[in-house]
Image 1 (cartoon, rainbow, N blue to C red):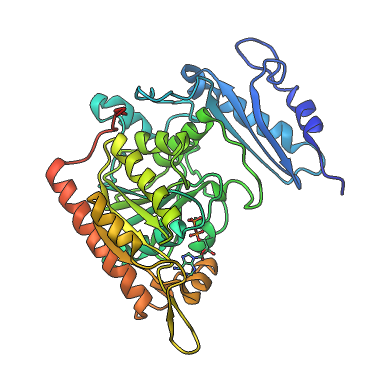
Image 2: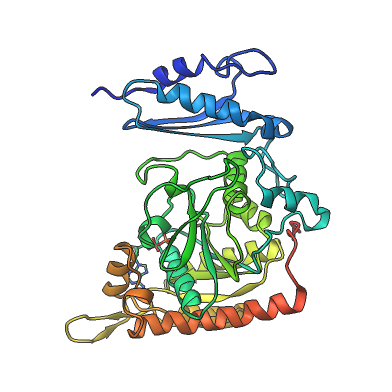
Length: 385
Ligand code: ADP
């Protein structure tokens, strides 16, 4: 069957009228970020944040219109506020173009000072890295599962919207339901709740995100999801330390952050940027984890230090950050996490799982102390140094 292109989708969307201006939503310039790939369609409808809550019917109508096009398999439309992304120096206004604010969002907004808290969620821990491919997602998944194994109630928010890997690593597929049409029920495996853009778009769909879209997607995944009571929500951050990451670090009321780094010096420079980013937004860095530290030959057990070993530990000490531990470059870690059965649950007695568990214990010890000391954190303001 012939697959539709952008033109056909735009043509179909012209049938949808903006109730306020009477113009069609294409002519009114409201469609952005249109992606059409293998019959999967995604786009954003840019609206004034104030109108967001009333425009859920428009969003649905637009999805229906695109679904009518022959060859379309799935359509995901999101409402997004069309104000500019905040420049550094000021805290961003709460974007609320979410499809009908869910109860969590209403509560969060209504409480004034507590606007950025997520009710029911005791602590939020970001897992970040200065660059991609260092094993940030693998570490986030295994830490979340190790925290769960300690008896805590745990959720995972996959904020790596450019390359969501949590669905694959946690072995979850499908789409989240929304029984009331307002809040999404997170999907769950191994007793851990998870929300990810990966549930809403096909894994191989390249996503083009603009500042405001990033913010509203994150806010929706954080606030319009029925997380329930959680001791800890682990956030798998997008790799890097650019504007998108800074905005996220600023928008989510983080208890603390964990930085994952490989031992190469260059990655350490990136890790340093990560540390500075969190310091800028006043988020405590709980420590650094050195990943892919040593290679243990699966045949003979010989240890090779492929990258210079111990660099992260030294650097952490120099920067005044705690060194939380190191994970070996290990084929079992790769196979189990890429196969949706992370080693922490598939082989909990293995040395690798025990190492994750020791790191998780320390992370929780520090997070619990922060919760105790300061109560829940508010959204930090950016302080430029
Ligand atoms: P990131 O989130 O930093 O981009 P991922 O967690 O997706 O990185 O990891 C990249 C790849 O490296 C994945 O295939 C993952 O399974 C593998 N990997 C991560 N950590 C390890 C490790 N300690 N040993 C072996 N493979 C690993």
